[in-house]
Image (cartoon, rainbow over all chains, first blue to last red; front, side, top):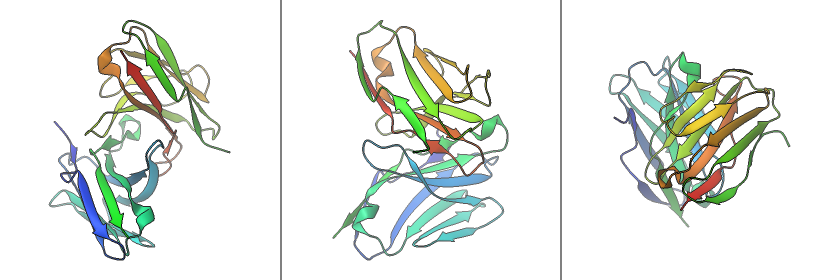
Length: 113
Length: 111
């Protein structure tokens, strides 16, 4: 049973427009959420995170929104750039169990020039 | 450069062979993790360690063993490789909840 779900395997967006990547979770014990970006043949790299006590966190072009009642989070990228083309993973963790991360299956974002 | 180094980067094994994947970090992190990534799936936790000399099972531990004899190294062993263990393996380390650092991965094929 997947505790973190990314229902869109792929997303294509025009350069300069907004990219919205979505993630749903089922485990109410999750209290920290992260987004990772992954290029081919590389490991995931940290992008942005949010604690469950917040509903929004912003870092430059990247904003993460958290809706706890809906158990849903989203990543907004504005404006999208061709270099943003990568696989984006949503991950969640809870206190205890060494803060292990539970990952979604990823969304391949393609930003078209 | 500081970071997480995984060796080897690629390996092809025959069914039944054994091998050890090495993960080394130079950031003095306490926590280390082994994940596997399969097509259409996210990364799944195999084993993890909360400090030197400790190990614990993750979500998919069967068929794997680990050791953390030194703080900077976390070894993942396959005693008798099976085709189902064909995957990309990622090691990660962290000190804080923010600071997961991943290696670049080991692509393993079992034929």
